[in-house]
Length: 371
Image 1 (tube, rainbow, N blue to C red):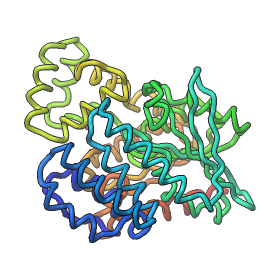
Image 2: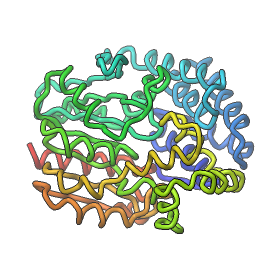
Image 3: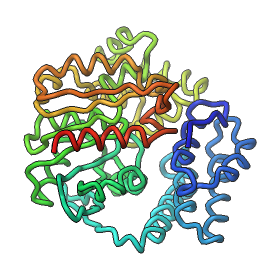
Image 4: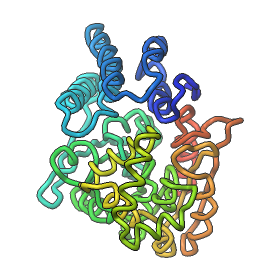
């Protein structure tokens, strides 16, 4: 469904649209509008209570996919360690797999450094190619199901997986790594694959390009949003001075700035809270220092594959300027195809929420052109 302005705070409104974008498969629009009046401010407890109420109602009605998405949203802003957060995650997972029981999804656990990386495979009957799909900063593997589930009918086997810092592995204690070629290699080894397309969503746009730079079994790579520089995306106002303070180790100054910003900006509060959780860092400075590694300037010339870049002109997470910077830096790529989605056509928001179909159509056309 098209992107809608329902809530006044940008990030809360975006998260609501993450559910709404899948339409009737994921929610009832009237239920989202019902709780909107109680979600006018950033209040993780109120957010949990309202979405949890909808989840319980959907479960009672037997609407298990709706319940799954509502449980997922209920836990979104709760800090790590809250018992309601873990319970909501387990309810989300339970409802999702109950809702898809008839689909007979192939489920796997990929061994990785003493942990397990969950994977879901959707096999094509007449296979043209294999596509690996992963998220980024905050997605769960099950959320990706509605994105590409039609691709097997077009000839593409889809393998969705969670890596370090995501979903179940994060709950097991496996923190995120910028060296994404390592979990990708584990997935390739497990499924005995030597020629795949890799698609990374959101922060996964950086992760996928990073993996492609160091893993030759990736033949084509798509950045379903472009993270040229994660730190620059976090602070667009004074990026160079901000980076210098971090690189130079001005820990106390950065932590003081972060403490003040978190009080004033819900987006900063959530980004830092969740970022410290996924990276395993104890302070904002440590998290931001870790994120200086999440940039593609140095590794872009190492990417030799066919590349697809997708961006939205009104993305509130990622500056649209990243598109041209990234495209120009891919000097060794076999080919580069890119598209910036506009407000006029739709798909102008982060990861094309509101018109995901435009992005998936673009990806499928790109895949067909390569096979």
